[in-house]
Image (cartoon, rainbow, N blue to C red):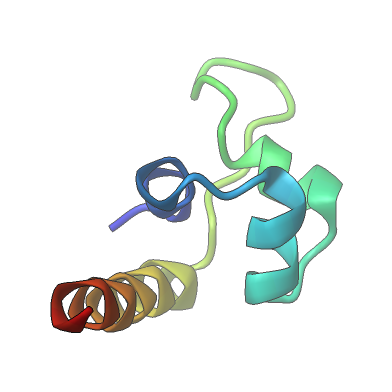
Length: 65
């Protein structure tokens, strides 16, 4: 799962996303740019794995409520 998809799914702000992943807010915003943009940055592969794990945890918490 892409970190931006996680952000949108759970209604987070870029600030929340940045704090969760330990990056600056500017860096988190670069993940959302079009791939053709000059300042687009791919998140590291670990960010994809972390986003997947966070999504599973949040989904299990919301399912148990």
